[in-house]
Image 1: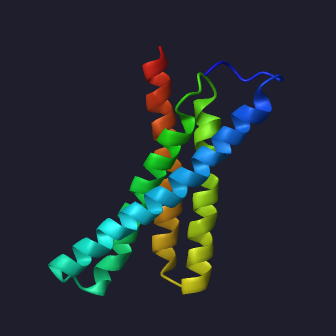
Image 2 (image 1 turned 180 degrees about the vertical axis):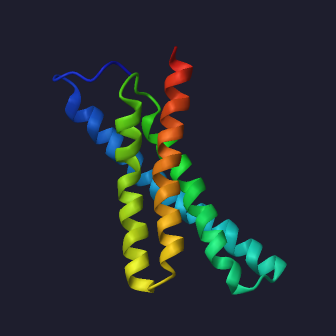
Length: 128
């Protein structure tokens, strides 16, 4: 995709936000489906749910940031961090509703933003 200019910015940002929404929903659903199938097949205890949710958040944020910044040629870091903000809001609302352990919430938020930054750095290093 070309650099962002005033003539095509509306369509470019619309596709960017559509990519964010679709990749967020699809990745969270897919990884939750896979993790619940693993828990059922292996008959794991529910105490492992906290660790599994951290893995789901990490994998989802990687997919969301990678899909959302694909097609752009610059501003990877900003676009990648912006792309995971709706997912971080979802995790925050989930924390408020379920009143889960706060250490899991802090770890999840840190992993979401750190993985987005790492994906942006990897993408910018491949650009050169």
